[in-house]
Length: 172
DNA sequence: TTAGTGATATCC
DNA sequence: GATATCACTAAA
Image (cartoon, rainbow, N blue to C red; front, top):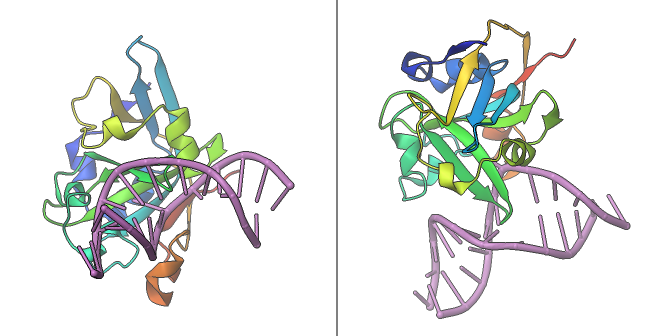
């Protein structure tokens, strides 16, 4: 059983938090007391209004408001009408940045992760800090990380689409 | 490769 | 009010 990750961890630049989050364990306690645990195997960083791949690139709206808010908060977004994608807000307040959780160690795919962890839109805006329902743990694992270009954002243009802000645990 | 799906943003 | 878009997945 690991240590719960605290506010300081998330209150750093997303480019530090995103790779650090790889290998950490997401814990979700269900109302009936069951704990779902999954080690994070892959993340992506989204950072700033100039990042054309970031939702906040179009400015501050009701939807992206959370990205500008406190670190340690969960941003859940419904994609293509059926997939929940989970992000963790990082960095300073008023600085739009967040980490997209792309995969756990037992499955690949952002929507699979939320499905398996039973996370949906009702988690949007919740905090990972001091919560009895959902939090991250550090069990001391320090996986090797490799980087790669982000996926699914072809619309963002050559520069932003090729930048290596995807962080993957190197298996074996 | 394509269909399916619905919230959000943007345009009348 | 209407339409276009989208950080995806599964099936073929």
